[in-house]
Length: 186
Image (spheres, rainbow, N blue to C red):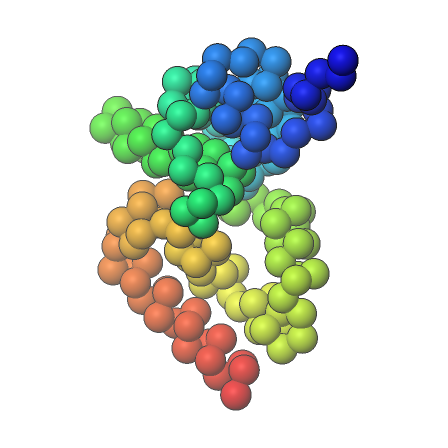
């Protein structure tokens, strides 16, 4: 008789999360193996402090292990990796807030002019033509705000904390980015 249970490497991330919610350690290990590399890269783009990135990674996966049953899934329009990123982004903001009470916020990765991230390459591949050109020609400080607010779904306050800027500056840059995009596309 054939087993109906598939090996963790054969399952998609949503199904892995469902198994993690049931306490399946193998599913958790597979989910971690698949998602940790891109999550670490994405966090490093927003924070160059390796200690904070390591803490956020640990707290994120601990939260996933504890709260996998809370994942709503595709039935409510969510994805497993989107849910994972939301947890990590919130943990990163919490870490920035915590550190802000004790010292200066860590320097942002964007100040070191990193190589294009995988998400930028993917975005360029999916957003082509005039829209892609307009995005690539935005000033870095405007693109940074646009990425945080539009691509990552952060609020103005969360973006301000993430980028170490006053909320008014974030609002101004978001408006300038939208105006520049609109102008480039007309």
